[in-house]
Amino acid sequence: MTFAKSIVADAIHACKAPCITCSFQAEDVVVLHMLREIHADIPVLFLDTVHHFAETYVYRDELTRRWGLRLVNLRAEEPSPGLWHTSTDDCCARHKVGPIFAALAEYDTWFTGLRREQSPSRASLEEVEPFTLPGGNTIRKVSPLARWSTQEVWHYAKARGIPMLPLYDRGYTSIGCEPCTSLPLDPSNPRSGRWGGQKLECGIHIQESSVTTQNLKVFGNDL
Ligand code: SF4
Image 1 (cartoon, rainbow, N blue to C red):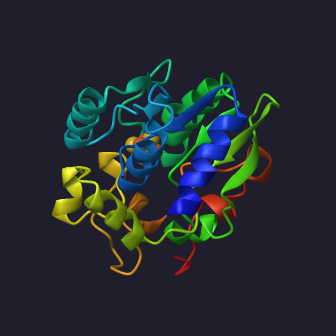
Image 2 (cartoon, rainbow, N blue to C red; image 1 turned 60 degrees about the vertical axis):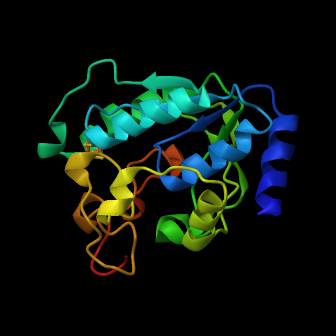
């Protein structure tokens, strides 16, 4: 825990233009809590895909009000509700990948709540990594919880009385857009309810140069 906080502090002191992407899931909220202790005004980038659960929007607004967050609501220039019906890849590209990479161009340091445990595609995640945006600019990607367990995340939140997205109380263990999120299909895999278990990543955490079908899709029982 101390290690994560020192990563946050070191990264903040070393940068000029930090931001955090926040889906308002537990990990993002924990990192945001750490950040607020030393940089209360940090921009909080929320990818408003127009497909989130109503509960997520309510929780976003409530935490924004309670914590006085500097929320940056990111939407596609031309949202296309329901695009996921025909292609989840096209839908994620339009509502997530395009808006986030455009927004990140304004920053030099990107905080995330990613953890190694979450997915095979995140298994070798480092706390601090370079990330090259499509325009060629390389920024620092900082994931202070990279080596944390789920239990550590919840322990941190509980010990500090941090309210969590109520959808967790209904059994969800990883929460994204409503059409692409279900209760976990495999109880041992918290992200197995995302995209019906058929896809690992939306694309925002994949370097453009390394995007392959294999790191976006799930084959067989790879989960
Ligand atoms: S997660 Fe689903 S609804 Fe959300 S942007 Fe991706 S395909 Fe569209």
